[in-house]
Length: 332
Image (cartoon, one colour):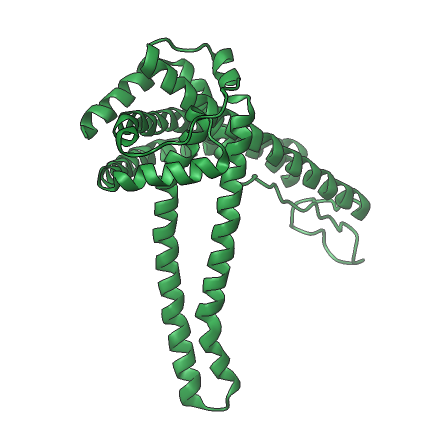
């Protein structure tokens, strides 16, 4: 396998077909973990203690507890809805990106951004989500069982014997480290297998069971080639992160200057840290997030294109030695 050629083709495809950037940016946006919570307290006991000088602390006012409870409930509902929306966007964008790259490499014709979204908006995205969910549940159950097994030597602590207690603690620590190493290795293997499982669904329209079986066999038959490509992509990912460090530092400085400047102006006008944070922090987050999401989206297009091209190059070789299951009827 010509790994350099695959990487170069993926880079050219990423740079030439800008329509893929939309799907990549959506994938980066939906794949960003967590929500930025803004926690601040409005506190102000101006006349709590008679005869004392006014507090030197800023004038923060506590809202009514009922208002706080309603605000927390509203945030939880919005967060739940946001998670659902981002999950849908992630799998639609991922499926559309896989199929768009496959179409470009096969015919040289790029879909429009609307066509790219339509390529992802079908039951293949649902099956891909179900596959990831089932794999995630299975991995979680196995990991919890191994952690419980690793912690089992701690049962020796119930005996009033110092030697047994020391042996139990040392054994638990050793088994815990072993489970952590196994977890890291399993995460790497699963992340590689997912590249083939997902594309069996997105490109071949397989069922979840077929994708797991055929994708695993496909990766196993060319395990050496797949491992080398993973190592190359890991090195590229590390170099990408290193190059991104000065960009992140520059964005932090710029965001702090603009967002912090706005916050200081608000505080000087209204003497309220609450309003200063409420208005200054979003500016800082936007300046930080938008450029990084854009760059990450382009990188995700390159990474996805590399694995899709690798899948397409391996497919004819595998089909010669592997008896494949007939594909299901094509759906749109």
